Image (cartoon, rainbow, N blue to C red; front, side, top):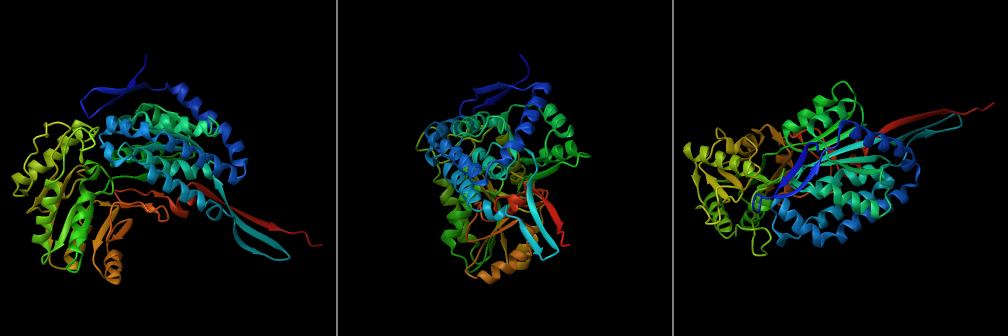
Length: 460
């Protein structure tokens, strides 16, 4: 038996699932079959591809009763939240709805002498490397539009959510998508690198860590394979003096703590105008004190374990370092905190950007809150980060939010909301968050290439 991938459940540390990785030859065979199937898939009418993809999405929905506890076992999200099918379906449905116009030829001009237009051509074979924190929603961001656009797809999912890719492939195959058109694979890092470096794929979409994105780009160096990266975040919230305080507290703290803080666009630092600071902190602390940490299979649990002990260890280290440097921790250790994956959610004040908890990605249930006195101060602090995914602005003034947003180095600016992917908008980032661009019409542009036609008519 070769190398095994093992999903260790955060519930109790047991091995929940394991799968053997493909050999190098078997992996290249998968890619070859995907390439051989692509032309026939792209030749099908667009509406047929849309219908098959949406039938696959519906098949996932039919599995939801089994998927919800399976996710709890694999990555710790409480069953009370019901899984990811709502967002999964919303994103796929939107991409299906806009496919015809997004993929339509771009007319440049026609007269008695010339006809000129630009077509959107599928790349060919798209390799999707998906993360564990929102395993279905992050995967469908690329899988649905890639298939609809006429690409074939090879999906590699994170080891922590080992069974997700299998379920997706089974669902889509049951709906009529040919097996070679959408394949799920289990790969080692070495074979993954070999495939990318060997031009097995025409486009790579990676969602994950900065280090993982760098590895993808290194593997693709010199191949001219396109690489889309959607990486880490250290997303800020800014509460202005005219904000709806209760709404700001509820949304920003939920954005910081939901999914045990394991969200790339989760709120990891909050800047509050001095006039609202004390009230904001007091309300935030009360919200977090009301959480119930526990087994995610228990319907009463509101915050589950982190997906892996090593993730929780990093968050504990950031908190301890901050407190040692003068930060104030407002939440006493919960009785259910076992020093392992079960981690007390934490609010920190008296923090500075010299502390890792305000600088490095935490990816856990901790948030630092700082007092500010002006937009200029808040903007400087929000931009003082190596990441640039989203920012959440809280004010009653739309024009002010837009002006502040223009000065923030992020891919998305929210006003009076946070932590949400609108499929009509491009999901993108800047700086160390990467150079991806998913969903929206731009998502289709990134999953296709332009091909220009300059046709001269014979007139005599």
